[in-house]
Length: 203
Image 1: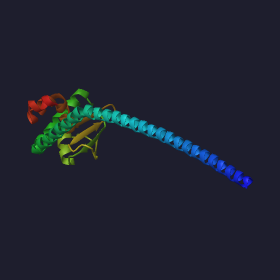
Image 2: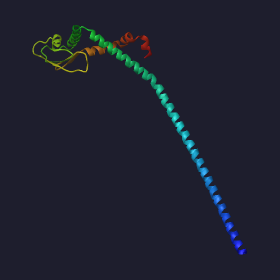
Image 3: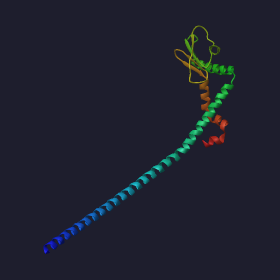
Image 4: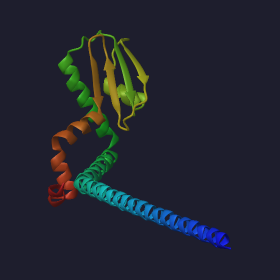
């Protein structure tokens, strides 16, 4: 009987020890889980803070870039608007011209350049033209002899032009070139007349 009680006591002690060990293991596991959870929470918080800081910096840089570009974009938009108004005004001016005046402008321009070049009358001349019919070209060139050849060409410009090529010279009389010259020389005056001084000073 004593032996049976001793065995039961031993079993109880073993079970108690096993239970205590199990509790210690479980507590250690819980502590490890809590520690790891805290580490992950800390890392997550740190990562979120880093991302927020990075995003905030990027947002600030983007805003600064946008604000810095606004005056340039505004200036570009005004310049484009002014250029469009100027080109429209030039087109309206040209379309209001009498055709005889257009031909006279081309004739005067061509003669002025011919005088500077002093081309011999017998020199072979290839004449290319655009925006004109052949009779208009002949009224400007007034060819003599058989030293002229004529050819109509396509041009990017919507305005008439005549090009005379010789062995030594390439002479161009072009409404576009005349317009470009005056736009370069008188741009400020023309823009002021179109949009006013106040608009120009804002540019």
